[in-house]
Image (cartoon, rainbow, N blue to C red; front, side):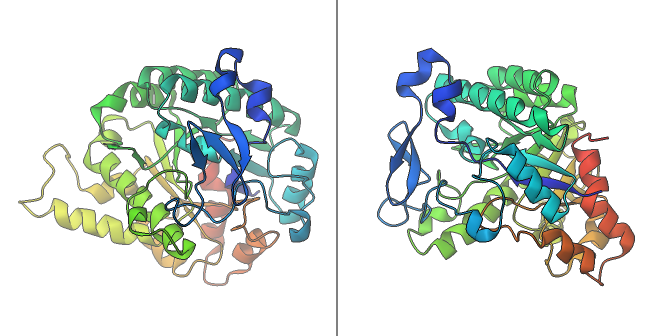
Length: 364
């Protein structure tokens, strides 16, 4: 079996016209043309254009020509489920876990009520669209952390009523880190549910650590925006005691490869063992939380040193992720590339391709 632990569903241009509650329609997201079709929310472009607008994205989220890439799907949303399933067959993927795009950053909007309503709309949409797949496409819920109690309520609804297999948060939430006590109601509920939480950044939507140095080129923006965001995320989840306090939550750090994690484990442990830096709230070294059941990471199919990474963090920590249908995905070769590798044992390939993701997302 092959489980794609991080595919994507781009929000279709009319999603909020179809699914957003009427009282929010007037201030809801609209699609505009600004160097590519983009969302306009709260007077902001998502993603922002690169250049004088700030550290954004050179194109919008609606422009990728899937036909030129040999894909059967008509678009990047879930509206053409039949086309997506054909693409999964072509790639050799049995089950795909579908993450949102701009909705992965819903927690950074200013209007908490609008953000929560957008999450409800998105979650209703993906639940409805995934149902005909007979379990082959499994949705990830969007949540908005501006109101952690409301986020907890929506998480429970999404997992218990909408058949979502997890949710997604950014590694930093504006001025707050993930270990901020403000978020405790949400993490408490996630722990009660034994939820999977993907830590994922969408480049160019909002400020991310390191991005502020660059307006161009996109090479720099993308290079630092995603890794630094997630590295801070895991540091605060471990260092702030969230993984210690809520051990039933399974966190997965997505779309930046896995080779960074052994280094970051070493650096956290090195600081933990230095008396002037020691974290008083952790009863064990940071690396022990990464090696435990609380932590997973995705890999790239052609990533160098993957066997070495697995030898340090454990072969039960790494999942396969295609990033379909985004421009970064290696359709239709990602599964083939990983299977063809001679530097990985059959056991490690089996764990990466399905066993670890099945455990992470509770897929039987």
